[in-house]
Length: 274
Length: 362
Image (tube, rainbow over all chains, first blue to last red; front, top):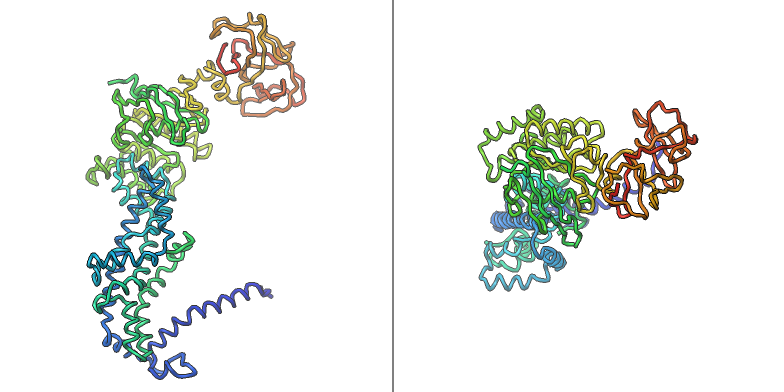
């Protein structure tokens, strides 16, 4: 007979408990979005709705311009991802492969800036954007996020793991820096670039504070802000709030589901997250 | 044309940013079509020189000329060189064919794909990797990767081929095979080649001539056999040769060379071999193990054999002398066992005398 390993068993039980605690709000949110109003507010609470009220979603779309929020969020998240990835790529390449005066100083300044939390500079950023007259514009939404020291630093460690002789070989083979980046560096670092793109897209999708500050028109709102205003607009209709929340989270959940391996690898690699 | 000095290095110096003087005033030249080995222990500066020839490093001072023209201010890609790296530096995401074609698809040499493919296939045939065309480097053995790297280096039809320890990642048997192949290939293409290695045997077997470095200085720039027969100094004598040379501390006084238990008359030495006058003082007498042999009669040195090591056709007799270990290289059939007492005699026309500073006197 196989001996029961108590340690493993206990570990699994603890893990299971925490997994349930973590997942429960998500499950409840999805189920709650399909309940009737009564079901969401009864005590003891309902877990599984009797009828799935798909019409909740139709009501959500009718009550608020969610399609517009989706579009706005998609545009800003995509633009910040593409541009910040491009900048991080060039910056990291320069720091790893190019020799220039003051490289050490630049590196140190960049690293120390990494220590400054985004919230600390959010009001100066707001002032800048406001004075430039960019409130309620896409540019205002994305401008502060078009470069990211963290992503650059992340890619730098990724590129650093590619042997320097590969760069030298490319130089001798006659490739320009530009050719090296696109024909060798990018194809060789797909994993790292993908992780950065994913992290950037997710954080763009989830952004809340900055869009809340720089937009106040309904047409420029992003999903998360739309959600909060919808919550207050919809008043006590909790089932609609939950349905809207599900809508907001769904794309990210799908992304996580498809790319979970890359995300975990990406986060584990650097022991920290942006 | 400048065939005798196809590659010329003049008073080359390299001081790294941390103040380390890697290369101290080095000058040498390479004949067109020759295969020259840059030999030396780790950290002697041989790879630094290769990198300066390639343009991957800038010299602190001095000049490098290819075919009579200075290339110090020429970018690596415009120097018409091929470079084979120690770790081959193949592009892992490309197939063998794409790797070999790469130099022809970028920069100034950029040409239509079909044309590039034809040239690449020609060099892949030369290096016998045609059937590997669609493989990724990760699936290849060390020897195959090596050939891909050489094909990629040759595909630009460079004037000069630089190889940085290209055999060090291969196992011993393959190393012997590939080094013969490299020599044959380089000679058939007729390209001038500089080959960096720390392995003297490799250098001796492959090189038309050898330049031996230590501490950023050329110790000897010569034909292979002269490193054995006529070493410039104590370092060369000790670096080249396997088993290593035997060294005895001696005193020269009044026409006699005195070791701990032997004595040699200076008059018995070959007068023509003196590099300069022998003055009284302390010296090191060095003799290669094949030139110090057991004899029946009382010889110059008597010793007790500590150990006998078999190396193929020969045996090394190891004995302790004057506190240090010394060796004698004898025939396989010699019936000497550990513990035997033997008398050894040196071939006086084959010994060397060095000053304590390492300068050769005899």
